[in-house]
Amino acid sequence: MNDILRISLIGLAAGVIGTGSGTIIALFVKNPGKNMLSFILGFAGGIMLAIVLNDLLPEAVEAGNFVTAFTGLLVGTIFILLLDLKMPHFHFFETTEELTRFIRTGTILGLGIAMHNLPEGIAIGASYVASPALGFTLALTIALHNIPEGIAMACPLCVGGMRTRWVLLYTAMAGLPMGLGALIGSSLGTVSPAMLSLALGFAGGAMLYIIFGELIPGAQDSGSGHAGTFGAVFGTIAGILLLSVI
Image (cartoon, rainbow, N blue to C red; front, top):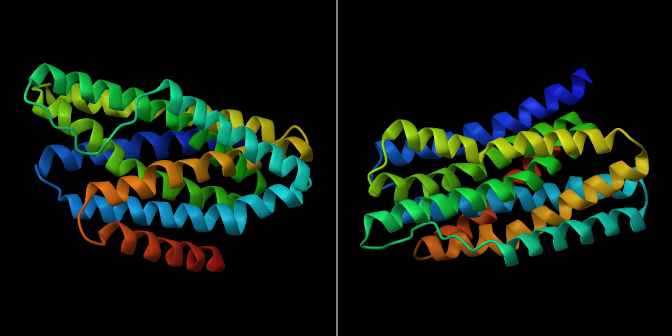
C-alpha cells in the first residue's frame, strides 16, 4: 500500500509540476518561441518512443505473454482514439480576436490535457511496478511533455485576461488526473503478472497513440523548418542512451 501511495504521488507530481512549469514559462516569457516548443515536443515524443519500444512493450511481454501484451496495447490505443473522438483536438497556438474566446480555448485545452493525463498516469504506475527505473524515467519524460501542454493552456488564459493565481490553479488542476492514473496503473500491476502485462500493454498503446497522434504532429505544426524533426531524433537517441545507463 505504501508503494502504491508513493507511485501515485510521483504520478501526481509529474502532472502538476509539468503543467505548472509550462504555466510559469507562459507567464514570465511572453513569447517562448514556436521553434523551441516544436523541439521540446519532438524531443519528448522521441524519448517516449524509445521507452515504449525498448522497455515498456518488452516488459509487457515478459510479464505475461504476447497475447496479453498485444491485447493491452490494442485496448490502450482504442481508449485514446475514443477520447480523441469525444474531445476536440487542441493546438499549441490558438489565435482569436475575442478575449472571451481565449478563455474558452484555454478551458477546452485544460479539459483535453486532463483527459489525456489519465492514461499517462496509468503508464507511470504500471511501469513502476514492472521496474522502478523505468517508471522514474517515464515520469520525468511525461513531466517534460507536460511543459508545452502547460504553456498551451496558460497562453490563451493569460491573453484572455484571467488573473495569474487562477491560471496557475487551473493548469495545476489539469495535472491531477495523472496521480489517479498512477494509482490505477500501480494497483492493477500488483494483482497478477497477466494484469501487469495488460496494464503495460495498455500504457504502451496509449503512449504510441499520443506520440504519433499528438506529439510528433504537434511538433511539426508548432514550429517552422526542422526543429520538431531534430527534437524527435535527438529525443529518441537520448531515450536509448538513458535506458542503457539505468
